[in-house]
Image (cartoon, helix red, strand yellow):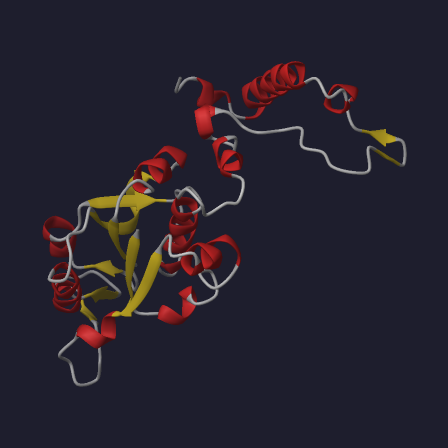
Length: 226
């Protein structure tokens, strides 16, 4: 998989992709992540990529020219499955979204910034828009980092134990609960006996019951998606 990210603040994305699972996935050759500075694609001598909005709107707007030039340059080299924009009014990014995108080969992410982006970018250049929640942040860099993390960890080989990702919360519309490790008894706080029994079938059945009950209590809305 190849992921290209267009941003005016590439420094914000250096750390998230340089550690842990994402870094290892890159070293294994499972994914290529390329961060592009939109200022490299402007013809403005001051490297400006924003301007005042037409009309009476306040704030600065990301211009269409550098975005179009950047996307066109990338598309000249390969075909992309999706060109994604992070927008507070976009479709909610969920685990099912990450599952779907992890199966793609080439993705472009555009990080929004300033007051917003020229509407023509959304109308003519973007194929998908995603939001991570009903709130606004300074730019799209952090949302993109979260989305890329959720996607990359699902690529086979990114996590040493491939079955681990399949049992994460939100897979199968359930929350995962009741995780314990050594010691089995700490200050009299004990791990449930069933988990120490060694009976795999009974343990799986118990965990399924616990996850179902926990989800019903904390997020009953997830069960309605079944």
